[in-house]
Image 1 (cartoon, rainbow, N blue to C red):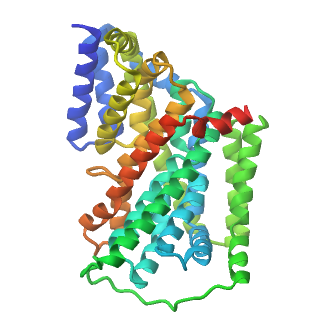
Image 2 (image 1 turned 180 degrees about the vertical axis):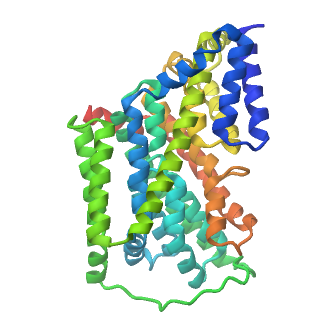
Image 3 (image 1 turned 90 degrees about the horizontal axis):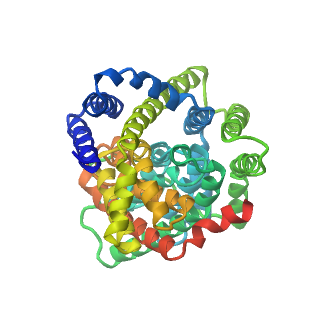
Length: 446
């Protein structure tokens, strides 16, 4: 059997196991074990333990549980409410302003948490009931929050970018720098779509706003003076300072990503304890347990995916795939479109962490052979992962929103979120045509 045939068998085994519904990490572990037995032989079975240990014996991975902890501490505080209120003060008078406020709050909150589901949950709890009370449709309200939450894996610090950097052996600092401008551009594009969608609804109002019999108190409509706006903006300064400190120590070479994450955790702990007083002792214990659970699952997925990647590399699947594409003399943009479609389909079924770790060792040699920049490709790959977060059947952000507003049909949330998949596709096209949008900041800093 050819190497590409062996790779296809390994992929098929993984997909069958994923469809059984077992946890992703365990499905990957079984796939790795079966792959070793089938293609390396039973006498090489002991390599599994060594590969798992080697994949986790990396100081850079320490950044993952630290950034997860930092994000969960913010998620348990009043930070999301402060951010949404600041956005409301500045944008509430614009058509669709509250929905735009949720996108703006998600953008900044994403930079603090690095987690898309956490961003959707934290902002959604504050923003969605407020928009429901102000007459927004469920589609616009939940769609804006679900899409805004996807920015959590793009805007630094991002766990996804850390994993890509480790898998691709690229600078995590450069990847963080590369994610800043695309994250802001996509945030603006989301706000533009909110304006368009709201204008379309104003012309043809929905008979049913989609909230079901959801009960809520209608808040008093506030008018904001310029003093109120600047006061609300001032409450976001601690967040801006925190982000700035993390970026400075990282980009100046003062600290490694793991050390920068530790500094971030310390600063967040001080901010939550003394500025927001948002966590009781019991809540802090819950945050620690939740962070441990999330970090453990991410690291298990990382370890077992790395074993599969090592087996595929030993079988020369990535190298032969790159050679086959080169020999076919396909246009590099055609190949890039095919890669994006493959990543999009994988995002329908798998979480970003597993896709990044599994596919990067396979796709990177192909991408480099076509002359694309690996830092740029990391951002393009991450935007593809954002699409998967708001597309069924696995779209995590959709189910996060469903948990926040259980009386809203999942269909309404999906209808509101799907246009943002098109917006993200448009962003990929924009960054492909003008790669300097992605690469300007990392080249400036490095």
